[in-house]
Length: 464
Image 1 (cartoon, rainbow, N blue to C red):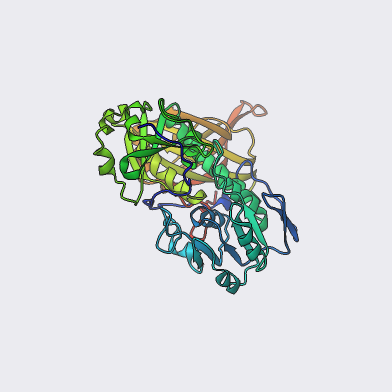
Image 2: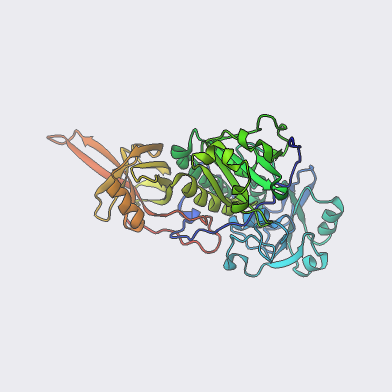
């Protein structure tokens, strides 16, 4: 049977398995290179996707969300906003019984009132006395009009199809000015992109097929790079396979419903089966007669894990899980704090250590002037260099390292510092002397999916 094209709802995914955070990163101490600054002036005119305008008289304090909760609630919380109410969608994979994302913890959702499941209860919305309502532009005009009668209502685009972009970008950036969080929004995107760039040292050039089993295993959905999961891996340098030969072409949404008969034609070097809670299991997929015929399966390169429609927090959580599962890579983050006598305002670094503990890749960026950096390195508590991470204050690369050094870092990251120093020769002395100045140092910790300052983060502190 040949596959048929069907644009499925990309917002329906599966339950996540949360990763425990060893250390967390607050963006306030890690300004991104592309962050924008500037305070929003109110009244503020918000331009909706259809060109209509919504006037916001003052900075919103009581926000109600009536869009799809898995993405919208996640995204708004990542901006540092704590909504008073939100629509629930318990019917979507990845949602708890309250209809909210399973990857958000209790404190992040504390005080958020459910204003309906699937569609908003207008009396519940009004009872919360919101000063801003956030709706999806794809919802009926009649519903938006009813919400506008309660409070200023803005519409955002769900952003479902865009190569190498995340769907939540189309919610994150339009909303950010309403909460004076434009710089934070750019930091969030930069952080995700830094993470994927650092992973690219291990993943680049790998081909990946992403297949969602459906319909009692009779068909599967082939996901292309236009979807959030495809974008995540593509930004990490992987090649997203598809469409399959013999099957239909991609739909505008990037999803293709293919027949299970086409499984042997999957030639990608890795194949990933995101699971769901609708009866599709790893055992069920492996029991398919044609499953062993997939070339990646015979090479031990088939992976099973959960995926869901998410905002930035959920995306970071997924990346933390999948990089370790697919590539055996453990990730680190370091916050950089400038020394007072220097002009540096700080920075951020992503460090990935490979499965053999013999290779490290990094993506480092600082903001502000730090002189002419000579070496970026990991140092121990005594200031002794453990291994170098290239030269420059904005550098990306990979290198071989000593396994013993990597193991020490993996075991106790809090005992180490990321250091950027400058070595120069003073020709005014007789004889000339070489001087090394530590310009920037920062704390190191295991990567956490929640690095967006969403209420539970604690910034690293470092006093040079």
